[in-house]
Amino acid sequence: AQTVTQSQPEMSVQEAETVTLSCTYDTSESDYYLFWYKQPPSRQMILVIRQEAYKQQNATENRFSVNFQKAAKSFSLKISDSQLGDAAMYFCAYRSYPSGGSNYKLTFGKGTLLTVNP
Amino acid sequence: GAGVSQSPSNKVTEKGKDVELRCDPISGHTALYWYRQSLGQGLEFLIYFQGNSAPDKSGLPSDRFSAERTGGSVSTLTIQRTQQEDSAVYLCASSLGHLGGNRVEKLFFGSGTQLSVL
Image 1: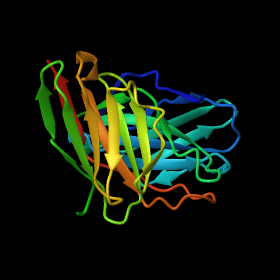
Image 2 (image 1 turned 90 degrees about the vertical axis):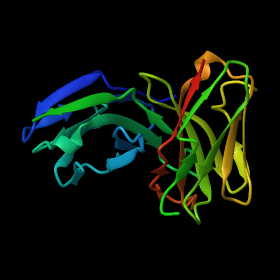
Image 3 (image 1 turned 45 degrees about the horizontal axis):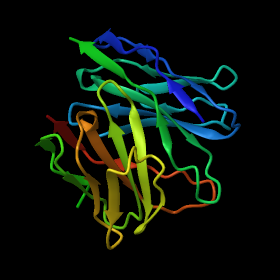
Image 4 (image 1 turned 30 degrees about the vertical axis):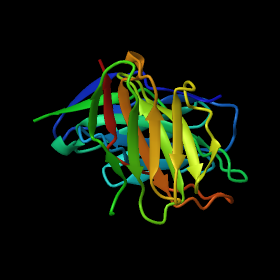
């Protein structure tokens, strides 16, 4: 079974600064997907960014980018120019490569609470 | 509706009582998932529906938990004889459900039901 570990229960950053959230995972699979989700106080999980393991290029979505190190099984999220609205719980998640309609479950880490200071 | 709707938003119940949690997915989404988020934990998979069928119930923690889906739409998660350890946020998500191939669909989450068992 796959496991996802987020070693930073809490992080803080000054507005406009850059912060990096860490995530490591354990798997014996070679093909899979990785995700970062944001959960604001509204509780609704919002997809921030995703990475396909077969792609060497790191995914980027505006101010959000990842550092995907497949050999090290590491998947960190970098938030540039942090904004007050970025304050939330961030979850790293793993999903197996789809095959015949199976492997649809997401395995989540325990999350990192990000505080943005004005 | 425009998004995944869950009701009630919050539920307080007494130990031993039964509760029903409702999820109304996005129209046309055939896949539906229930996850549980306990305090300080990541999301834990409970059950997956494709249409009205539940091919994977492996995450249900005990036989006190059951779920059904009718008309390929609304789903109800029922917890019988609630215990204090059932206190958590119960999140529902839906997706288009086009299984097979290498497509990984985007999940759309609701805002969850906060269940408190006294």
